[in-house]
Image 1 (tube, rainbow, N blue to C red):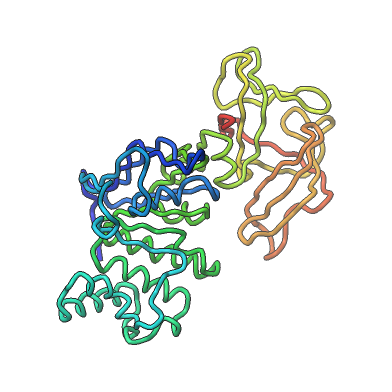
Image 2 (cartoon, helix red, strand yellow; image 1 turned 60 degrees about the horizontal axis):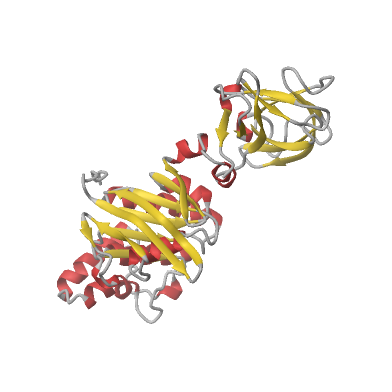
Length: 369
């Protein structure tokens, strides 16, 4: 089935959403647009406001201020059952005493659809989620992944305008979670349905979403394509939450070309990707995979790189993660290196002397937020 085209002017729009519980602001003046046919992930730690945002879209919570629109229609005052939404939750919420077919067709039955038309739609959904021939089975006889497919089919069978996914894969084991990421994403693209995903799992958000909105403290700190946010975080929080990052704090040098950082043996300079105003305090973020390691030592940890010693080495399948103690910095840095040896081996070993370096253009200037 070809990928459905996105429709101009369609989608989900949240404008000026604010929601407080007593003195605690759960969501603060939030604006979000999910284009027609897009999947946008709200990513953040517990308490960041992502689930509250989803509940406001679903109609389970009313915002103190702000509006919710779907396909240009303002729905803020509509009850949940009139918003034309599909919802998939972590716990599936299947009826244990109903068969797979009865679970999938429940919404159609409540809407009064004739049995013949209902059965046709149910069979179409069983094919779509690869559960042909399982319509008469009860949920307890299904695996976790199959139950999740039933929950997804039940949400999609009613042709929702927007699909809401609330930590949909959290109850699955790692291998099944990865395969379901591809299945849900592929289904969403084929149907061209607008979708909002809530997750605290960075890998899930990066794998499934057209755009990722990183939230903290009730606000969206940054939104964009997964690769853009990962490669060019705007704040320390985004850099550290979306993956791992080595952060350096200091001030711009006299000519603005370097970051001057204080170390236990005196200040040192890090070349910047672009000039900054003299004396301006800021942070520099460098991803571990952008750093390089070479065996050997330098006299003072300055010059073309920093002298260090490997204090941690972990094999992670296609790459090795190293923890390197750098005396000039008075701290440890993390370096990722693609595996290039026998399975389970690491190129560098505990206690080995190394020189750590990176290209200036691989550093990213970020705010302290």
